[in-house]
Image (tube, rainbow, N blue to C red; front, side, top):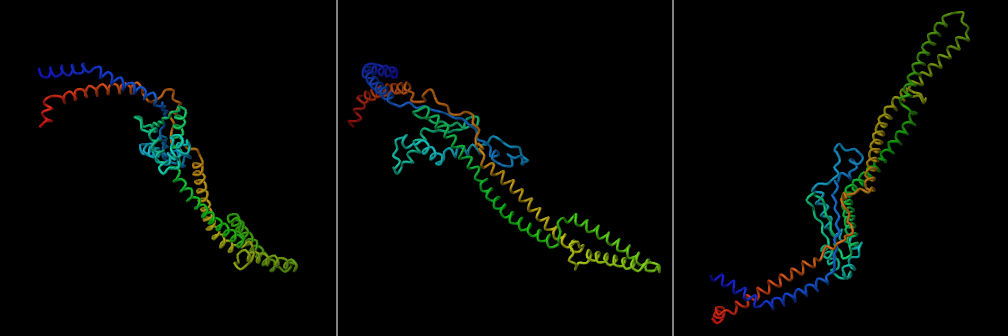
Length: 373
C-alpha cells in the first residue's frame, strides 16, 4: 500500500508541476531547435576496394617465370598493411597539401601545432574500416558534397600510391643490385673478349672447328703426296733411261712437299697453318671462349631480369582493386536534427521530473531532522 500511495503522490506532484515542466521542456526544445538549425550540414562519400596481392608487382609472376600461380587478391596481411598506410602521417600530409586543409579547417599554418590540429580535424571526418567481406570501406565527410567525393577518391588514390611505392621499394633495391652486377659482368665480358681476340691474332685462329678440319685435311693431303712423290723418286732414280731433268724436277717437288709438311707439323715455324701451334692456341681459345659465352649468358639473364624489374617499376600496377568509387552524395549524413530535438526534449522532461521529485523529497520532515542533527 505504501508503494502505491508513493507512486500516486509522485504522479500528483508531477501533475501539480506540469506547467513548470512543460514550460522548461518547451524552452529547452526551442533552444535545441535553434541550435540544430545553426549546425552545418555534412555529407559523407564512401569508396570501397580490396587490397591487391603483392604478386601483381613481382616480375616472375607478371612475365610468366614463376612456377606458382599468381594471386590477385591480398590476404589479411595485405589488409593490415593497407590500413596502416591509410592511417599514416604520410597520407595525412598528402591530403593536407592537396586540399589546403589549413584554410579549409581555419587553422593557422604558422602555428606550432598547426599540423597536429589539421591531423586531428581530418581524422574526425575520415574513417576506414574492414567490412564483413574483407573489403576496405573508406568514408570522408565534408560540408560540400562534391568535395567529400573528391577527397574520398583522392585518399584512395594516395593509399594506392603509397602501398605501391612500399611494395616497389624492394624492387628498387633489387634493380640497383642487378645493375651493379650488369656493370661488373660487362667489364668481365669485355676483358674476356679482348683476351680471346689477342689469342686469335697470336695463333691466327678465327674458327677453331673449321680451321682444325682444314689443317688436318691439308696435313694428310701433303703427307700422302710427299710420301707418294718420294717413292716415285726412288723408283725413277733406279731407272737408267730416265732424263736427268725429270729427276731434278721430281727432287725439287719432293723437297717442296717436305718443307710444306714441316711447316704444318713443326712448332718452330711461323706459318699460319701449323698443326702444333693450332692445337696449343685452340685449347686456350676454347677455354676462354667457354668462359666468354658463359659470361655473356649471365649478362643476358641479368639484362632481361633488369628490364623486367624496370618494366614493373615504370608500370602503373595497382595495389588495390576498386569495387566502388566515391560518388557525390545527394543526402546529408548529419546532423539528424529531428533526433537531436527529440533527444533534448526527452532529456529535459526526464530531468525536470527527476528534479521536482528530488526537491520535494528534500522538503520531507525526515530529511529536515537529518539536517538538524
